[in-house]
Length: 185
Image (cartoon, rainbow, N blue to C red):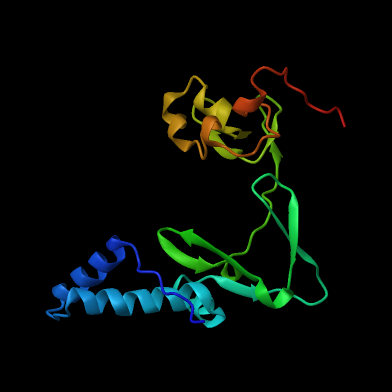
């Protein structure tokens, strides 16, 4: 029995038609629908189609490994079946400044933490700032810079506390109802 090819959504056909029309190419709608349906079927159902989509999106692709066991969960988190390693395909990637980039091209490291000389908070958003009235260099966190008396220094805040993802900081919004804790060690 032959596998049925499902017609693609209308917006895909319209997109292909529009792209061809922009380039001055006329193809009847039923031909575009047939070819697009076949292409979508290949992309969705064949390993080489999956690999090609990953290539187009600049995703790293890794097949399952025989030394691993892969189990599929249902929508309720229950394990439903074991997956053959040859039938699983992992994709990894990210969007950097609007462009698709393979994850293997990104190096991720933890930022070093430093202590704020004003409040003592150990955080990742400290900045060395020259204080104008006494011409000294101080290491201050974003919270102390933005809430300080000197308005001219406020534009030197690297990350606003409400936008920060570093939850160990005393000033992170998630810690607002918890008293500040600074280890004595």
